[in-house]
Image (tube, rainbow, N blue to C red; front, side, top):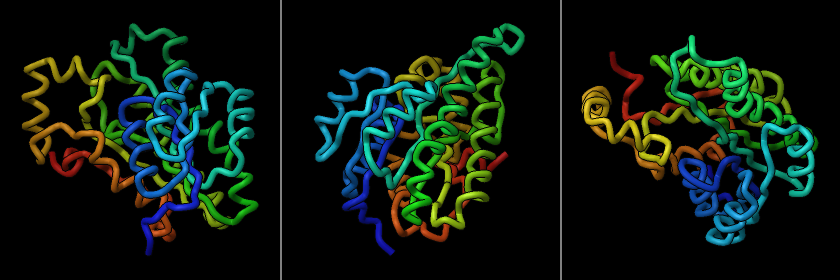
Length: 244
């Protein structure tokens, strides 16, 4: 088994900040040549400059034509991490159809478009790693985030569907399911004293996750150490989904 990613190319969507940035750093630290993706060319270039051997790949992962052009410009992709996504906090009855579609496009359809773009090359080479970033909300639900929960639940099953079709071609498709992490997206939740206290009681580890908590898991899924692991969802949540 080897966790060394030297010589492998990795594309991480939504990697200019937050968990995506941590994932990109982890893969680069293990030796991969990382393509940093985001909608902003400036942000992608800035992050790429901070990672040894990295390149910027700025394009919209929900745009079919942009995905095809962006992936085509990169050349072979050995590891794809589908991390891009958004959330929306609003009661379900107040969610517009446009908002519903926007959340599903960003979190679920983007993973389909990206995987569809890289899979033919992986199939031709007989090897490839796809890591989808799901969530504890792939299994659980809380009020006011129904579109996000639906999208992440769909991504869990898309992971398994990809495995069922592509495992025979030497491709491993797995998913990370982070719990509650300290990122810019969770600032309002962490600032809410009542929610923060609830979370610390609810999570057996007694704390929020930090982005680096995902490093080992993503390197495992991207490396040859996971060559016989396929269609699995690894929860990195401090034990949140293990207890009632």
